[in-house]
Figure 1 (spheres, rainbow, N blue to C red):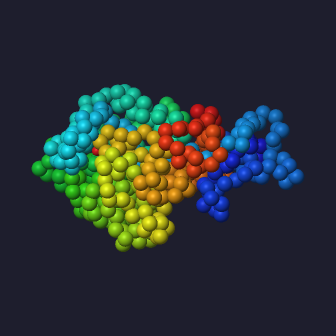
Figure 2: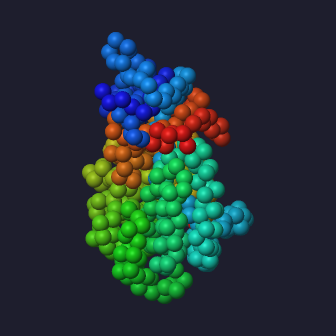
Figure 3: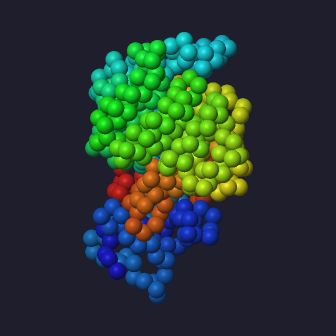
Length: 408
Ligand code: NIG
Ligand code: FE
């Protein structure tokens, strides 16, 4: 057996492995050997069955004292990089104005576009870093970050560069997504199709090296089904994955269309229909639910969780961290809301911020569970069971995050 460089022992391990018949894939009395940042072995603590190299020289032993060890958390949908905030619009909404109404009057996404275009790369980095530190402080080791507040080639690329920069500066894995089709920019208000031409013809080719996916906001206040289809086709032609903001405020049919085109996730989904659920199941597309936006916009239409469950659609949960509909920097709170607002079980919600979030990023061969061969992105918590992490609000019982087996 390979001698590891680090051994984690004496933890309650919530592996989240799908292969396990136990809730949360719990493994008691097991040790984990880590070599070169990856999980090399997981073995029962039975000296008669293995030596686990516990005594080998130079091996670092991390003793969990019986506490919980989970996979690093994954936030698979965020708009972390943006300038300014929209507290003023939130206040307007509390005085009776609507989210869509504010957006139509040039507020909403477009007001963040103005601020983001004006911000320097280092200003964008600094403001996003403060949000990222909250998420990382709660055990997030992988985050997806979308562009989408530039709406021109220059600023979209600037946002993607900032997103990727975190990987070289902090112990975090970043998946960057081009969301050039987030809203029609002011310069193209009278000719949205010409903007879609720009996204397909210039933005996607220019962003190719900086991102792994392309997303579209398909909604009455954003892009039509036909426009979304064109962006998806151009993305697929460039070898990029596709994702979509779908059925958030109305049912446009974008989730089913994107699933049929091979989307890796479809997100929001409050207005998803039963037949849409069946399409997602057929294509094993991940349904990403965003309870922060549901909560902050005071929505009443819940995503069809029972139907997703019945059809065995993998469900992920994310923060949707953005200045308009979800100014949220707590992934554990999102898991709590997935339970209390959407009636998911704590185990489903925890899978939603680990295993299924990895699937939503097409990284499930690398992260999302504690299994041999995966990255040793692990979190030690001062609780005994994952449900305790989700049930309390604002507690953050984190003890230590290990990114690739290293304390971070
Ligand atoms: O995911 N739905 C569209 N995009 C964001 C909202 C962005 C904003 O309001 O700034 C979302 O909710
Ligand atoms: Fe979003």
